[in-house]
Length: 259
Image 1 (cartoon, helix red, strand yellow):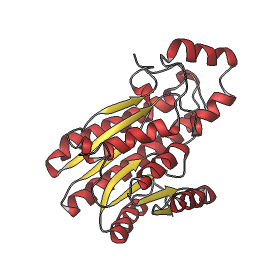
Image 2: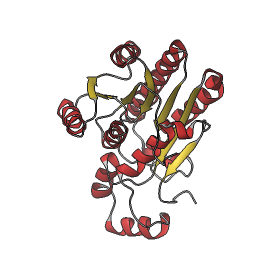
Image 3: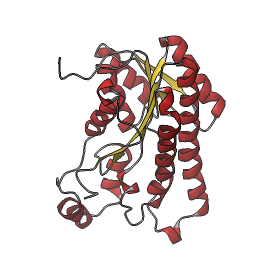
């Protein structure tokens, strides 16, 4: 018996895999021998760089352009991954649009509709297609969605993140409740302040020095930002066979900010 994580045979499809957190998940799973299929919407160069990085480490990575708000495109994405790798074992939703930080009364209508459409509809289509794929394969499967720890403790001016992600969290819990009898597990990982992707950009451009000190000294018990790899390890565990009896849960990776 070893302490290493083990995985069911088949591919991991990572929606939004070219982003900072999605890329870290892809690298972690590929490093464990899981073939990964990552999607991108517009950043083809970043997706190619990610696949080159994975290949250099001996892993198997395929990048596919896919609009997750298009259900037909998502169905074809998973069908192709199944044909290419024999089956789909893991589906990870790691996508999400960029957005500004506004108090609820000041959110532009078009901004709200754009974020909800991209995030909630994209997650729904990927989740629904994953459920159908797992059922058709007949031997279970695993779904993990990256949301935000703010669904547990909403921060001011952060509802454009927390609102859509709360809907996704409920969707995933619904899958856990409905589909456990088919051997399908479904969980969420809720990142807090992470020094990667959108979080890093916000930290540098929208948070003042005084706010940074307050966040680190008063809001995060561990008093540091998280790394993309912290999130990737959480996803890797929930995807593993060692997490076989865990479903319907949200694992916050936020340095204790929800405490």
